[in-house]
Image 1 (spheres, rainbow, N blue to C red):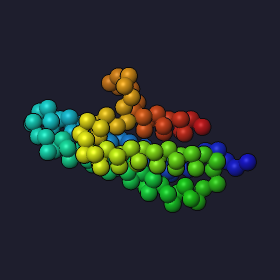
Image 2 (image 1 turned 90 degrees about the vertical axis):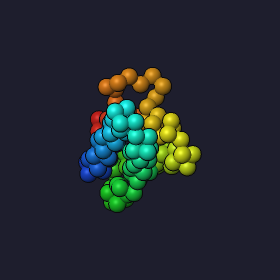
Image 3 (image 1 turned 60 degrees about the vertical axis):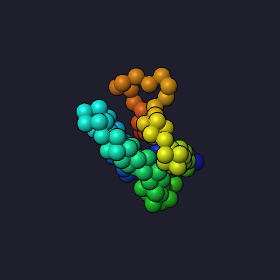
Image 4 (image 1 turned 180 degrees about the vertical axis):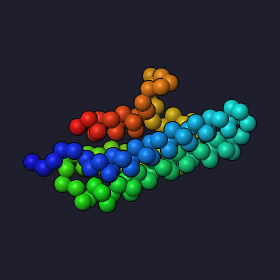
Length: 124
């Protein structure tokens, strides 16, 4: 049996993207609520989805060079995030883009789905 941990470089790269997504969401909310800028709001949420769509490609080289058992599961999880982001983009749904990563019972301050996904792999 091979190593079970996902390479730290892949975890770090996705964690950076997760942090960038939080910043995009915060800026989307700020421009909408403080400036009434619906176009800016849409742009930031679109960028959020594009970031999610790009996650599999961001770590593909790192994961393909790994013999860790968890690498395939990690890649599959990222593909699912990317698929849902692509769906939100194709539907051009601001609601879907905004709700992406957040379960129905989400409370402010809780980790979102991507952060919880990362936490599970970092704990392995």
